[in-house]
Amino acid sequence: MDQNMDISAHDERDPNPWLALFLDDSIPINASTKLALMRDNSSKSTRYLLPMIQFISKVTMFFIHLFKFFFPKLINSSKFLHRILAWGLKRFVSPDANLLIFRHFHIGTEILQFIAGNIPGVDVTGTPLKPKDFEDVKDDLFLNHDLNLYNFVIRLNSQLKEKNITITTPDKINLDMITEDQFDHIKFPNRWTNVLDLRSAIELFTPFYQLFLTSNDFVRASNSLQLDETIAIYTSQILGTPGHLGLVNNKHPMVPVSTYSAAYRLVLHGLAAETLHEILVKMKLNKNIDGVVTPQITPLTATS
Image (tube, rainbow, N blue to C red; front, top):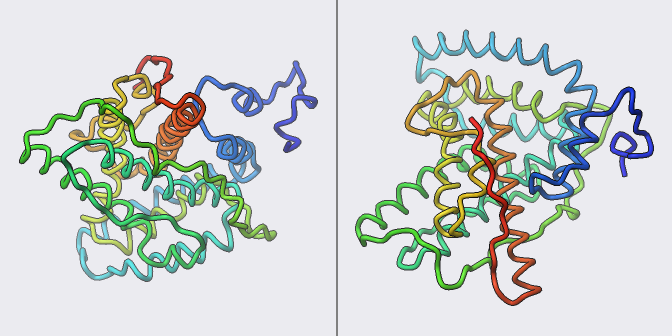
């Protein structure tokens, strides 16, 4: 175990808050993800670089916003953007942060596949996004992630309305698409330059995202984070329990939030996806043991 998350180093006069959260099991989350997230939170990059990077990012976004107002189509290259993202992830982002980023695309794909695979009468196919290396990032990975989500919601609901289908708990829940991938097969770079924590990396990349995408693409990407609530509702209707809705913080997609908060909400988006995926993983393990799927989710009070 990492020395920062070792109970033997606990000092009652100076307790480590991240150790407390690492040991706490009240929120379902993959063990590798949890360790990576707590190490990321306790890193020197989060402590010392993040505050400065946040300030620089917000100021830069303000001037890019003005630039885009007067010259909305002068700079627009998703391909170039994703080459920058792939280059930055490989050379400057820590292994823990890269793990969290790469995992997100895999579990996001599986969650959408779970919803589509458990609503009888609908056929919603998308483009699975399961990157295996930094070359996969260059293929418009981040942009396609947002497009997949909106296209999924549009296609699903058009079929539900056309066929007069209501999402309910199926007789047998299909969990074949849910995997327990720990990402042991991916070795992320760990050179002396790979120091950026997750939030610092997102704050740095967000202005590039804003600059090289169209205004529609950037605003849509920001607003897609609030679809966390929509996806959670679909899942709760399938599972027949609203318990996991209390783990969602990005809410109310019909009331958009400023793009200046996109970086912070993106981290919350990742956490919501991780917790929902872990719930499905535990259900699958329960099925493998008992032969049936029995949702075992403790109801939580929704947070705002």
